[in-house]
Amino acid sequence: MELPHNLGRRVGILGGTFDPVHNGHLAVAEAVMQALALSSILFIPAFLPPHKPTCAISAFQHRAAMLELAVADRPGCAVSRLEAKRAGPSYSIDTLRTLAHGLGKEVRLFFIIGMDAFAEVFTWKGQEELLDHAGFVVVGRPDHGKQSCGQTVAANFPGYAFVEALGSWQGKPGQGTIHPVAMPPVQVSSTGIREAVRQGRPIRNLVPAAVADYIEAHGLYR
Ligand code: ATP
Image 1 (cartoon, rainbow, N blue to C red):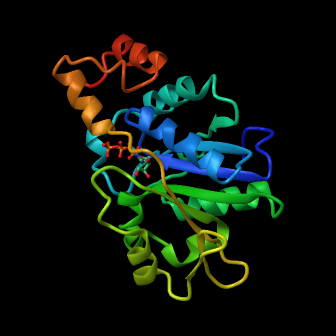
Image 2 (cartoon, rainbow, N blue to C red; image 1 turned 60 degrees about the vertical axis):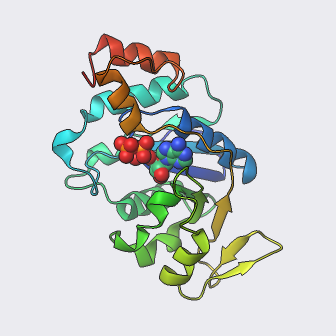
């Protein structure tokens, strides 16, 4: 498997549709990198997102190219196109297995997820196995404040208890921990950006300049 070199030993994984990547995704990466002292963050665009209608999504090549532009000047950030190599829907459990196997036991993986997606985690394929490969990092998202991380943990991850001194939920030995990370809300979504482009409104305050240029040059979201 091709993976970027020098990811270090504490690797954050930020998966998503990234249609397109925006400043909210980049703020999440920065906040989590600092909060958990990660050595790197790997952005993984979903090839076929299982929870979204595929006909409505931009081509993988565009989404991946925009991500590569967005992280080009960000130390510690890299993009992996590994989900494009698999047939069928891009399930996170398959990606985690591949990464855990490819990077080896010395590397700790942290799967980063917004609170909105975490609240749905019980519907994911192989959810009971996810924490065998990685810790979860759950980031608050505007409009999802009421869905508390604790309620989702209690409902879906039996045996996990919050350890005040560590600021995270711990399960059985060998199982990944669940870390809540608070960050100032960034009011931006890919849906909002696609709508703005369609309506001819500016997006340069919502995405990196190179991504705005790419959207314009390829006539995306019109
Ligand atoms: P869409 O509007 O098309 O559903 P999105 O903006 O939610 O897209 P995704 O690519 O689906 O973007 O998100 C990838 C991950 O980033 C998810 O875990 C999501 O919860 C998280 N995320 C996206 N935007 C933000 C934001 N503004 N603040 C915190 N987390 C975010």
